[in-house]
Length: 169
Ligand code: NI
Picture 1 (spheres, rainbow, N blue to C red):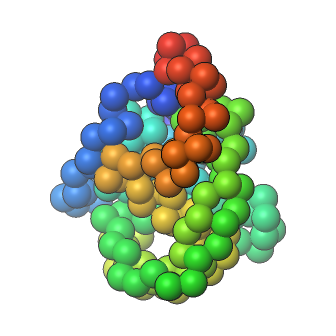
Picture 2 (tube, rainbow, N blue to C red):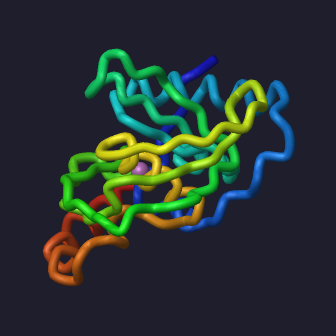
């Protein structure tokens, strides 16, 4: 398939709520294939369909840069079942915000249910970076962005950079 252009901050599509995937047909498989190509080219950890402008509840996570044994995973119509009360602050980035990295506080662990590319429903419990990646990508499906988690001060400090990014897109 093909690499697609990643939508950058400033494009209003990133604020839209994505729609459920009705069935996993060849269009969805092509979309996933494009997401994979696009993520690999961008060397990112995760990518949601909305980030290539498609408002469907679907994202991929590839932790292989951190854990070489990790397989790329596809999450279709994901649901967050549980998050831990314990939280952790870690530096985070997003392919829709090139060059911007910020400390974000999120739950350490998450329990997620989703459908894979073969139509099988699965549940898993994740912690640390994979948990963070799933929570970050899930936010995209709700039109939420990682900067929404920042403190007012951090957001104020970032204002100029965000404005520049929005104007470029
Ligand atoms: Ni992102």
